[in-house]
Image 1 (spheres, rainbow, N blue to C red):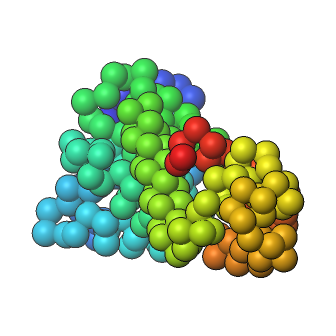
Image 2: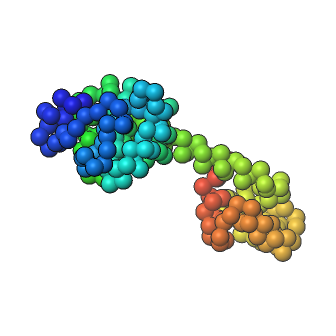
Length: 196
């Protein structure tokens, strides 16, 4: 890593340390700290937090051989600004340093896709759990709303009063944490080709 930095004049290497005890704020004031979370006799995540506490103004880039799918999110939560594999192409490592130096978050394209997929799965799970709160009647009302039916049409289809439909809609909004009738309609329309 040191030789890589030295070959690129936009970066200036201030120091190199193999032990955290050798790194003190009084001696250097870096803009970026590149760290491998494999630190001898030290918990890597704890070391990362310690560095962030010592150098609050510095952006931390984790460069490691640890599997990014297992450790990247944990490092970001601990205060890192970027995460790169040691096996990444040199161009990617330079991009990581450049992004972090500009205050931007850096993740590999593989890791970005994985995190977006996890977010999508989390949102789907949230939707499923919210649906479990609904009664069969309420689900049926949502289905009819998704088919662009108004209260009168839904009441006629379900053979109940318009007032009962209005009560169902109110409970559905409450259970799904929707703030307005139009938000309920948009929610139902999004589900038109997914849930029914």
